[in-house]
Amino acid sequence: MQISSRFTIAIHILICVDLYGADAPATSESLAGSIGVHPVVIRRILGQLRRAGLITVARGREGGAHIVRPLGEITLADVFHAVESIGGDTLFSFHENPNPACPVGRNIHNVLDGHLAQIQRAMEHAMEQTTLADVIAETRERVGGEA
Image (cartoon, rainbow, N blue to C red):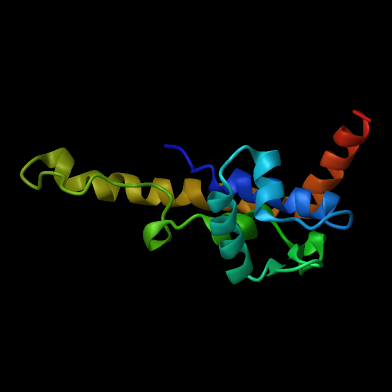
């Protein structure tokens, strides 16, 4: 299982917006240059972050992306839920047609569903403990050491 790169791209976007947005507009082109993906990918994720109420995006000279909530109030879970479309709110995909004639196939959901839900809750709880402020502070410390 692997979570898509949208989550880490979204975090990268938000860090760049905070660190560099005051100096120059955080546009899809400038963000794409830092992240190493096509600007269309950035625009899609910016749209998801905007719909989630985490950023605004404006055109023009004073345009670009801007974070609208305090950094300490945005958790990694908020970002994850903004950009990861997980069907039925479950992280784990399940094979669709277990054989009901097989004892394992007939019971696999009963065996795994609770465990997988518990694992997902634990992951989301851990994400709720880290804010964007935490991640940006660490980034500032590391980036400052490179200057």
